[in-house]
Image 1: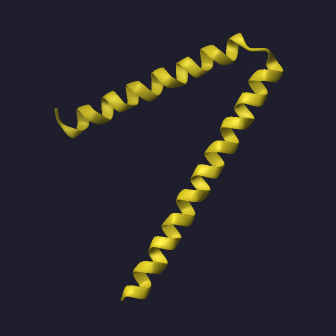
Image 2: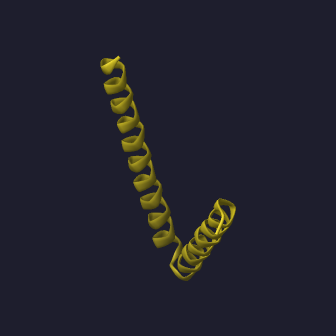
Amino acid sequence: MTGGEQVASGGETSTRGFLAVLLVITRLSVSRATELILGLALVLDILSEQETLSFYHWRSLKETEI
């Protein structure tokens, strides 16, 4: 399996996951779907913030080594 095939299968997996989430959201009431979307947005925001902080921490460690 080449790297390109791995990327393609990963894209298919994320698309299937996205479609599954959409299916669940459409079966929920509007208020529940809104809560779910806001919750997912909050989790993604927290994860991206942690990733950014860890990147800056790694970068500061790298600069102190030089």
